[in-house]
Amino acid sequence: MIYLDHSATTPVHPEVVGVVTDVMQNIYGNPSSLHGLGVKAERLVEEARRVIARKLNCSPTEIYFTSGGTEANNLAIRGVAEKLQSRGRHLITTQVEHPSVYDVMKQLEQKGWRVTYLPVDRDGRVSLADLEKAITKESVLVSIMHVNNEVGTIQPIEQIGRMLANYPKILFHVDAVQSFGKLPIDLQKTPIDLLSISAHKFQGPKGIGALYIRKNIQLMPQLVGGGQEQGIRSGTLNVPGIAGMAKAVLLTEKQPHFLRDCQKWKKALIEKVTERVKPVVINGDLSLEGGAPYVINLSFPGVKSEVLVHALEEKGIIVSSKSACSSKTEKPSRVLKEMGRNDQEALSSIRISLGYQTTAAEMEQCADKLIEVVTKLQQVMKVRSR
Ligand SMILES: Cc1ncc(COP(=O)(O)O)c(C=O)c1O
Image 1 (cartoon, rainbow, N blue to C red):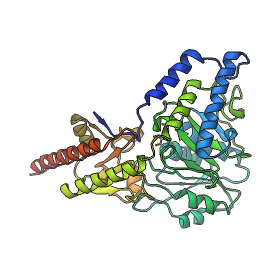
Image 2: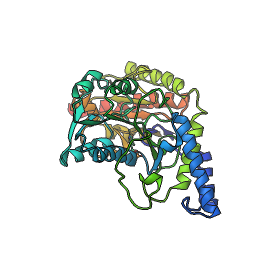
Image 3: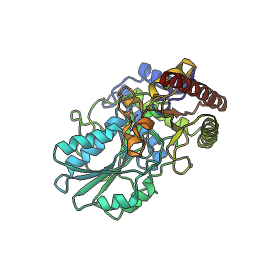
Image 4: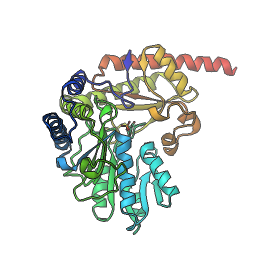
C-alpha cells in the first residue's frame, strides 16, 4: 500500500509510539498532583511545552495544550470574540478556511457578530488589499490559515501580520495545522497573536494539539473546571499525547530535505500526468513560495472523485477526495468553488498528500497508476455516453 493522504492524518512514528506507551505505563500521575508521580508528569509536560515553544520561537508560557486543531481554532476564535465583544463585534476570515474556523464564524454570525469572508483568487489566495478594505473600527480578529488543507496554497501570513501590526487593536489568528513542522514559522519575525497546531498532522498522536497565545492576550475560556493551562483550558492534561507530540516535533528536525524532495516529486508527477491525460485541472499554486509542495490537488473533469479514489485504492494507492472531514459529502468542495472551479471540476478532484516517509518510487507508481486509472475511467464514460 502507498499512503498518500498525509493531510488527513499521518502514521504515528514508531519512536512516538514508544514515548506514548512508556508514559502511559510509567508516568501516569496527574500533573496537577503534588506527589512524586504527579511531579514527574508535570516535568514531562513542561519539557514538551519548551520543545514546542523552541520550534515556534516563543515562550513556553505562551503554549496552551488542547485536544487538537479543532479545539485550538474554536478556543482562539470564540475566546477572542467573546472576550472582546465590548470593543467590537466584527471578525474577518477567508472563504477557504477549514470548517473548524469557518463553521465557528458561521455560528458567531448567528449570535450577532458580523463576519467578513475574504474571497480568494484562482490559486486560493487572499489579497492584502481586500483584507485592509474589510477592516472597520469594530474589527477585533482576523483568522487566516497558513496552508490550505485541500489545495496546499500558502497564505501570505508574514505580510498580513506586518500589515495588521498597523492595527494594534486587531488580533491575528493563524490556523497552522497543515504547516507546522513542515514550513518554518518564527513568531519573533511574524507578528501573529494566536496560532493553532495539531500533532496528528506530523507523525504525532491524534487528539492532541496546542494553541499559541501571545503574552498578555486575554480570551474567554471555553472549557472551565480545574483551572489547568493558566485557567484558559481546564481538564486533566493528556500527558502521553503531550509527550508524544513533543517527540514528533523533535522528529520534524530530522527531515531537512523534505520540502525539496516533495517539490521535485510534485513537479514530476504533474508533468507526467498532464502530458498523458486530458483534461486535467491543477488546483493550487505550483511555486514553492506559493504552494505547499506536499499537497497536490488535481481535477479530472468527467471522472467522479469518489470513483477515482476507490479505483486507486484497488491499485494500492491511498489518496483522498477533498479533505477527510468533508469527503463523505456529495457537495462540491467549497474551497474549489471559491477558487472559481465549476461543479464538474470541483466534483472530480483528488488530493495527493505526501509525508516524511514518502519516496520517489512511490510517487512514480502513483503517477503511473493515476494515468492508468483515469484513462480507463474516461474510456468507460465514453462508451456509456454513446
Ligand atoms: C487546516 C486544518 N485546520 C484544522 C484541522 C483540525 O485539526 P484536528 O483534526 O486536530 O482537530 C485540520 C484537520 O484536518 C486542518 O486541516
